[in-house]
Image 1 (cartoon, rainbow, N blue to C red):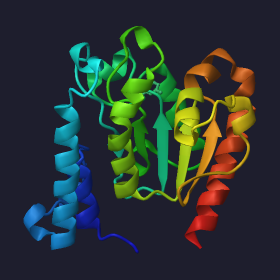
Image 2 (spheres, helix red, strand yellow):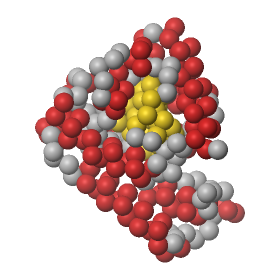
Image 3 (cartoon, rainbow, N blue to C red):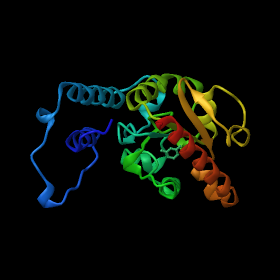
Image 4 (spheres, protein in one colour):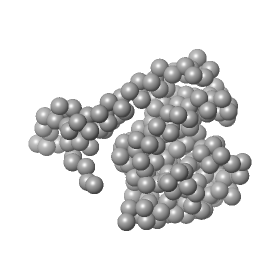
Amino acid sequence: MVQPEHQRRAYLEALGIDVWLPRDQAEPHGEDMLDTDTQSDIRVWDDLRATVAACTSCGLHTSRTQTVFGIGDPQADWMIIGEAPGAEEDRRGEPFVGRAGKLLDEMLRAVGRSRDRVFIANILKCRPPNNRDPKAEESAACRGYLQRQIELVKPKIILAVGRIAAQLLLETDEPVGRLRGSRHQLGDIPLVVTYHPAYLLRSPSQKRKAWDDLCLATRLMREASV
Ligand code: URA
């Protein structure tokens, strides 16, 4: 179903994404112009965002600057799931905005996607100190938030970037090198694993494989759309 432009705009605004329009296309809009389903979806997102922002379920709330909820189109076909915010993300409140994030943006652009047309989230909503790996109790405490985001977005494809995201989502100890390159499932949603962009910055020779993974994800997403 194609979503009317005014609904898409209201959604993006509800997620805190600026929507820029040429002056002659700007028109009055707001929640009162939306149907009841859309209004209630917006409220669900607002409540989830507020719950995450106030979360004290694990020790990471004591060291965070702010939570990093996730960003993008709440009705995206693609959902990208990373590990956890780093220093820059903790400072800005947005996932993948550091050097690795710039590479992720380029990777998405290479397959015709942009940051505002996918939904990007992390396993953890708070930064682990010194970027250490998430502890089991931290990812368990955060799991429900990501689960809810997946239920609300209902993506056609999930791209898990890096070992931590892939292993936690798929509940496996297999290394990324063995998980990538094939189709997995998260419930009824196809999932593709690829290398973390931070790893690709250190090992650019692996970019070719990441490209293959993105092509696989594109193919699976198209299959899910027909
Ligand atoms: N690495 C991640 O996995 N997520 C981010 O948001 C930033 C870096």
